[in-house]
Image 1 (cartoon, helix red, strand yellow):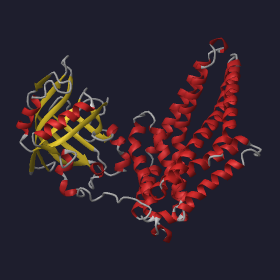
Image 2 (cartoon, rainbow, N blue to C red; image 1 turned 30 degrees about the horizontal axis):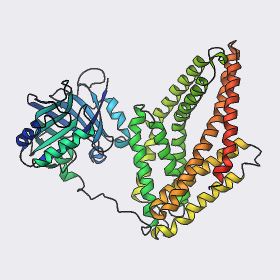
Image 3 (cartoon, one colour; image 1 turned 90 degrees about the vertical axis):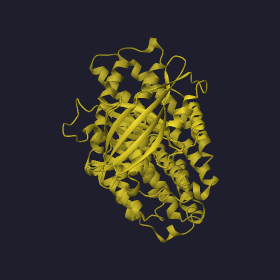
Image 4 (cartoon, rainbow, N blue to C red; image 1 turned 180 degrees about the vertical axis):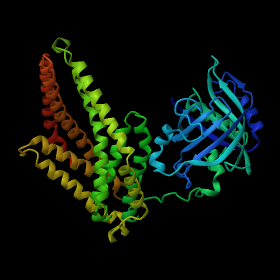
Length: 503
């Protein structure tokens, strides 16, 4: 079974040599909560790193290795999780899921499928490390941080080492960010400097990777080409879809929601700026993004409804809760979540999803730009951004006289999303005007989203009441909750004119 460890660390080149830097760290007793410093016996680590032939993992900041030696020997998959931080997923070398022939375990291969997309994973480099570790301890003997001086040798996975270097790793264990800053200050004072490469693997493969800064994006302004501004936003959403994929597979909190939002943002912006990125050319891609959002939405909407009805039931006075209402709600959503989650995982493992990712990459590599895309963004993006806001105003204006008010509000909600996301994409070119539009649309979207959730919740409550009635249970509480949801919807509708006036 996999274990997950969050790594918060920094790497340094030891200008004065590893031994001298470690001597300086030993002098940190009494600083930043460090009560004592303990030195561990030297370790020898032997790691083989796996990747695709074109190094897709390391290009995405991901490392996958099989390591022997040390306290954590096994398979390690490291995923980016913020500045100085990575999530490390570990599997033992032996046991369930382990392969006798040294192949990458299926559990880890699945987590990076959005990156590999069927390409074979094979050894790309071997790194051997001689490591001396200092543990910084608090007054109870608990380890706050570990400082490691490494002598590293790297070479082909099936051959001798052909390069070597020294480096220092400072990793938090139970200590806080202040300790990492104190260690940073101490190391720099004694000649250490931030490492040129973020990982050992990047350094070992330096000749096969883009030079630092080669992929740095230009700063976007009102004078930037309109296509460049729109594509930058779409690129961020595509990166988010891929980044959240392994988190969805691991059932991390909010991962499904964030992946679906990125999918919707990409689709909305491609639709809103069809005069910049040819609308007809991207129509099939938008259809596939809609499909992915719908698949993810099954799990996300079920989570939202479960939490909504659970919270609502908690607000009902105990004397008015008649029958096994909580048990029935729990059973219903447990089954629905299991089904929805499996449907999402099946989709992520399918060829349709992988083709979508390939098509998104192809769009970014060779976008179908129109002539307007090459003109200044500040001039070109204002019109479609304003059009998205006008569509929202028209949708809101249709609500009061609509025969089906719930449907009209749902249509306004979708228009609010497009207005918001179009404005977000245009911020680099339009500045404060776009920020205000995005903020207003977001506030409205949240209100209309709550209203829609209430509509769906009432439908679910009617279904649960029918099931309870068939089982011979009292349905009073379901009716009460239905009315509570209806009252919440009415209050939201009363607040709508106030928010509409801002648009």
